[in-house]
Amino acid sequence: MRKSRRYYRRRNKTPLLAILIIVFALAVVTGSKIASGNALDHSQTDSSYGAQTADHSSEAADTARLTRQADVAAGMKIDEYKGVAVYSNGADYMSSHGLSYSKDGYYYGYKWQCVEFVKRFYYEIYHHEMPDGAGNAKYFFNPMLAQGKLNEQRGLVQYVNGGNEKPREGDLLVFNEGSYGHVAIICGVADEWIEVIQQNSEVPREKYSLVYKDGTYTISGDRDPAGWLRASSS
Image (cartoon, rainbow, N blue to C red; front, side):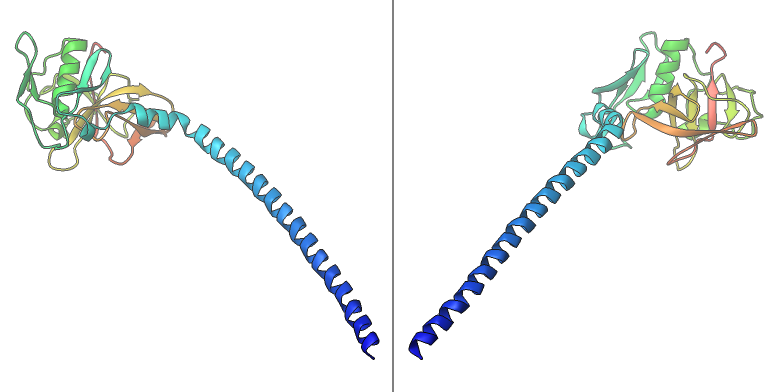
């Protein structure tokens, strides 16, 4: 009986060892598949991520190129358009840093508010002096004026947003929302968007949607402009 018992035990060790070997082999195979799958997934993720990075590379480059005003001391140049500099107004958008004048005494406005930039731009590029250069940005647009008529306060032709005139590069874009409004210069125009350059905003450049429908042109974005002004010589 003892001899038989030893044989019985040896017989049971063999399948147990086989089972352990099979389990180990399955674990190796499974681990290999998982590693292979992870490698594949990682490769696909890298490709997808790379594609997304590629898709947004120009946007990311633009974001990097556009220095945020709050990150730069007031009075430091952060951009320019047609040789006219855009300056930071610092972290406090409501602040001003004295009065700004041309070399020959034309008044631009408070340093470094949005109005100061657009008046300086129009003076340096178009040699344009506004008959009435005072007032907040929102008052650059006259809501009582008919389409394509002269805005006598600014000495510029006025076009309403949503009207029949397509915006052009160099136009002065006016936002009349809020207590003070905002003004910017259109520096790029395509079929479906415009780009503006501005002072005293989070970044010096922004893009807005441009929609042409039923003979009208509408600019829209985070804020919608009232319209744009244009120098007769532009």
